[in-house]
Image (cartoon, rainbow, N blue to C red; front, side, top):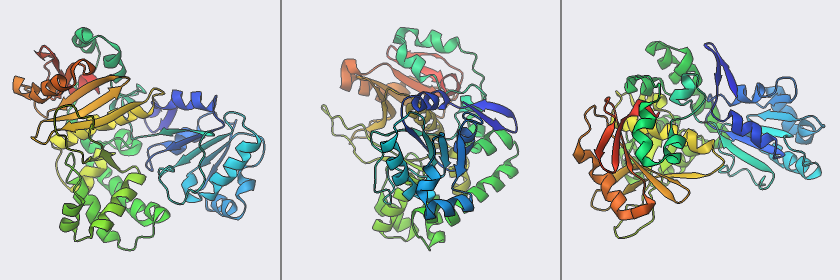
Length: 410
């Protein structure tokens, strides 16, 4: 699926999955943060063959509130953009589908996770397929329309990994530049100047606080909410500690809990769960905190890119890859009570791929220790470990750990 930008037409990772789901299901729901490209994706899906209505248009929104059935009526396929602005439309869609279950009738997009919104009282279970459009991956920004080489690695025998990655025509890049521009289409592919991106990020945050957030919950203490956003950006890659966040932001723990949920519902915050299968070790169960886009996180945090932001880049790519697949994969981190930790664990089928990320150009044998501990813990279920770093070395540091430049994979 192609998306139009000032640079030309860039294909998106979810394009093929979206087209396939529209051929099968009466409704497809595409959710994601505002400005990830959902509207462009929906409007240009099949030009001229679908009615397109955006609830960002006040006239359309007013009509939907007065008579949602009229909005979804008719026999032509219809695209309803930003549907979270009037959740009653979902009830009308449900009734329309129950009368006519032809595939592809409805394409719905929303800037909030409709599955988590409390106001959505009626489910589209059995009637809809769901896709998430995350910020653009590095390979999407390069015009390749894909995520990192996770499918290649999972599908290949481990003995072929080094040759597989060496054979790619991947171009090296400063990961800090990628982290600063993030993956939202406008700053990622249209704005080359840091000052211009700063203006865009500032406008994005203001729009979220003053408009989008109010669609989800009535919050008057916007300076407090922004302070929590900044505090969470400064804790990338750390365990979620709501009490600590509350203390640092002068907010109550229940308020922190509710506002973190709102950030997650808006697809800005990501809480990465712990891998919970316990064999012989005591495991940490609290989630870790990341952001959906490093550009926004760095803007809010007012800091320079660090190792946690490189981890976040890898997670962003993994999330986009995971949510464009039909076959479900799970993402987690692994940490024991004595401090042994693996940044990411990909569970696909009955196999586990452990991944460690190091913001170092010279990976060492000692960097493999926790990956090897993980493999010893989970035996044949665990594949070889992957150590992503910022240098150029592509080699087996240990018999079961491959060190690879991050840009050879992402």
